[in-house]
Length: 315
Image 1: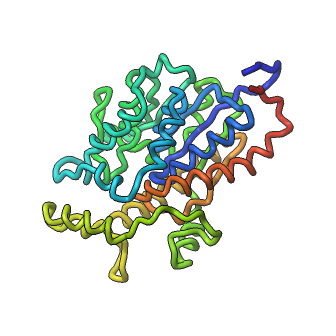
Image 2: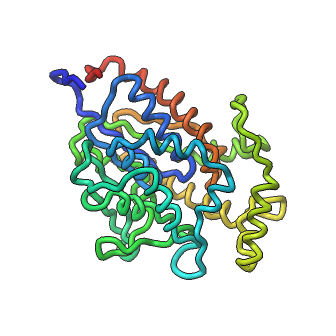
Image 3: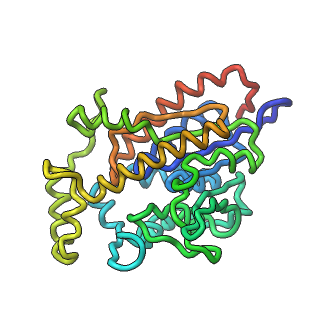
């Protein structure tokens, strides 16, 4: 990168949002095409994962992997538990992630990185800026009710989205004076409108995905359910008898994070907000990476057009 005198020090704050987080990878691709390299990148929950991959120059490896995930792959990565403060431990998932991107010390990363977590006992917002990169990601990703909290730095930590879904303030603290924020928490009204259309696909035509019959995925789930006392049945999507467990959890967390994100960004507004329309994606739609990445890329291309008047560094 070539430094331009007077050019802003750009930071990137990646928001929480579960499966919608793959859209961050599309945003990164759009930034790279414009020769924009942030000096700092921060994230909460899935945003922390993508931010860590980017800060360690491993985001391409992460993108390549997530594009291969199928619905059954996703479920196989979930290690269910009947103990602790969540339905899943998250160990199997983190092990799989660790096989794709190498763990590093945060202090040694080529780009400044920070993750946000919440102290379960005090509600305090915790900034993770040292130690194991992947440990920070896991500590930031303990979605309440879904993943068990993580004991880290002598605290029980849960999802950073509970206190700061789009960590703009942390990004400024790491040296950025122009912050790009990627907010995945679309307004609840927009999400409801997408679901009312009667499909989990957006209105616009999407690229065809490899055939993956839903019944095949649920057949795997049924076998699992026999060993788990019917727990998996409660995770199924709603079929007219009321929302399933995941839908209740996801909807509740979405409402909470939407309100918190708007409040936090009103108090410390980013210089530019990128808001991909992903209201149609569900909590566990991690197998729809191609779609999320495409939407993130296209939305970022439009939003970044507003930065043309800035004196930006070039590749």
